[in-house]
Image (cartoon, rainbow, N blue to C red; front, side, top):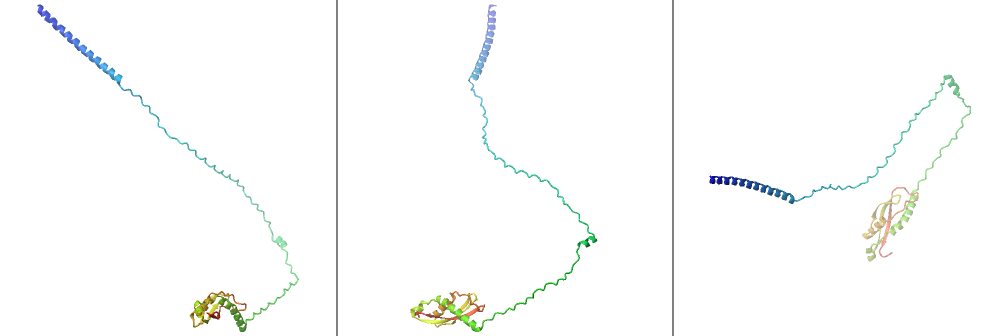
Length: 231
């Protein structure tokens, strides 16, 4: 009897110890978990809240020019009605018109006789005679000859050889003295003489025709003497 009671008491005591151990383990695990949570919260890195600054905007103040003052609008002129006064024309009857118009009076005074002027007879100018024209021509050639001799240049060949000669040149002039053409009419045996005489005629300036000379283009002849020995 005593053995059975002892073994029964031992079995009950072992069950109580197992339950206490499980509770102790559960309590210890809860404490460890709580300690871990507290440590995690304590050592968690603290971050400051980031403040978002407003973005800066550059603003430039620009002064706009003042608008030009607008020209004042012209005031409309008052329209003044134009009144034309029309005067009534007097009615003229036939009897009154007859009284106004004076009768024609015939004058008995004879009209003055105008002096009769006789037309003057124009006497035509006497045309110059052939002798007079020839004399004027010779006088004009006498004026022209010194001008041609002043433009005469003796060739060096004639001076070197001491040769001389003469050549007749024919030329035509206008009444104003303008040279129209020139040519050798009677040549010399020496070509240098002909060339020098023609160059002297073509290089000269001529005066106008003399009074009473024919006012038309005229042909002249002149003999030019060229000497290489100075004679």
